[in-house]
Image 1 (cartoon, rainbow, N blue to C red):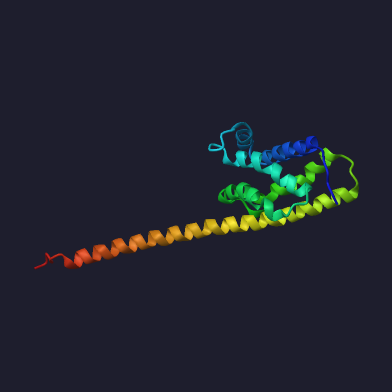
Image 2: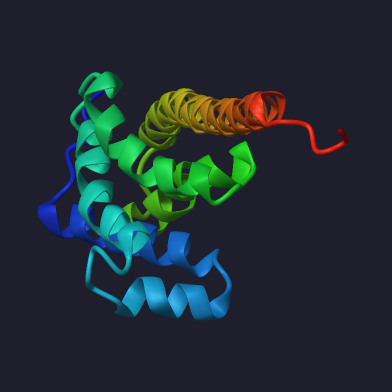
Length: 171
């Protein structure tokens, strides 16, 4: 079933999707996400601004959801680093179920059901992306701990060798 929407409706959905997603952050953070346009100072806001539209287009145009995994990754990767729960990290996807009927209006129940089904599929893809991101974070942390432990062991061994080689002052 095709979900052909006008460009104006698509733009409005993306705008509201961004606003509702940002409003779920604390007030000061939401203001920063909304107002700061520098992508280096505000990677979360930039990712949302740039990636929500391609994600919506893929849903509406029945594209393979694998095609939007890079967009999902860009949004979710930062959320995974923020130590959000998995549910909070991917909750922005479910916002679409709130926004779509508000913009589209009284579309048929079949259209709404089809859209909800596609959002559910996107949500599952988002959970997969989140899991991969978290796994990478944990791998990095484990490697860092291992490297620190190795450095400590190397210093300890070096200290022991120096101590064993030094002449005893007890004589």
